[in-house]
Amino acid sequence: MGKIDFNKLNKTPKITKVSILDQDGKIIDDDLMPDLSDEELVSLFKKMIWSRVLNDRSTKLNRQGRLGFFAPTLGQEASQVASEFAMDKQDFLLPAYRDVPQLVLHGLPLSKAFLWSRGHIEGNKYAEDLAALPPQIIIGAQYVQAAGVALGLKKKGQANVAYTYTGDGGTSQGDFYEGINFAGAFKAPALFFVQNNHYAISVPREKQTAAQTLAQKAIAAGIPGIQVDGMDALAVYAVTKAARDWVVAGNGPILIETLTYRLGAHTLSGDDPKRYRSQEEWEKWNKKDPLNRMRKYLEDKDLWNEEEEDIWVNEVNAQIDEAINEAEQVERQKVSEYLQHTYVDTPANIQAQIEKFQAKEAE
Image (cartoon, rainbow, N blue to C red; front, side, top):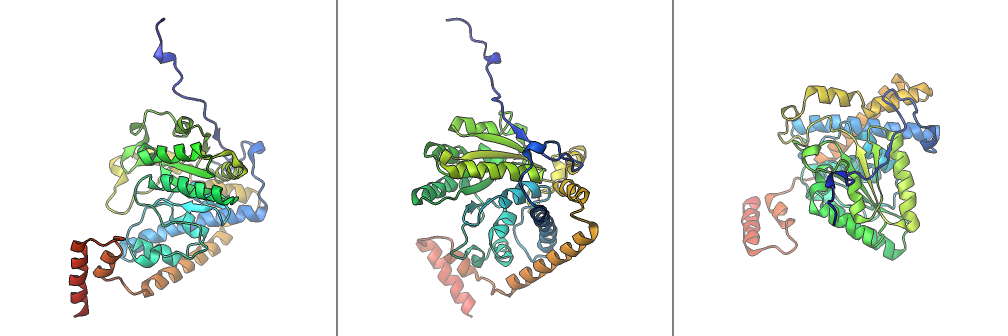
């Protein structure tokens, strides 16, 4: 047997990366332009602004003690909102903890999302017609769940997809591969999104895996993988729409890696991104701000202006005021109630604590 030169073996299967708009909002690929009307383009942008305002207000509400857990979405509006924009209301969403914007856009009342942030059980009670589960806190677990939900949709003969999100760090979890492998083996109608925002808390993407792209991880599961500019709303929409059509046609799942950037902290629970990334890097990505890119595109088409944006921002703030006030009207949970909702079958030692707290709460 001759000598094998492993250095020449291909470690990087060719992965397509899709972009449509450049940083100045100019079209760089007419052939990939999605078939969206002017009204739909404006609607998409308004949802992106809504997500940006929600991020800013949620940060303030958290600092005021009116919200609990919050994972900032600043910079990921194109990745999140434009992908959701391509979905059907009967498609089943399995979000991660940073994906509250998609969940609300999919139909969850914003007040419910605020209650979820506050750890209230009412934040996990969904209407029967909402095709979604509450945000998953366990990293990557939603990928396994999405594979199961997708298989259920297939067995029912339902022409819809299950779609889910994780970050770049999530692809280092075993659940990530188990989910895409199961869905691929059974050709389950699932769309798997990897929002590559370059950091799993403080760990940079290049220290998580030797793979040169995250999209290529799909190859091991025998399913297509594709990269898209996650700061480009039109590209994210176009790829998601085409992928959804392909999956619904019975071809099996697809993995989409959106190259985006978390401009804020990982969460507001003590994370300081300045300790692990440079100001120079942040400024480079800030120039790619997805809202600026889409805004310039619409302004060049005379579809948007500063006055319209000010009016819309005021409307969004009013919506948020109404939602947080509604959430704050819900009776606070007692400690005993938190414990009651922790287990399906309550262990004896926890039951004893419940009874102890109930006695104190009754005083």
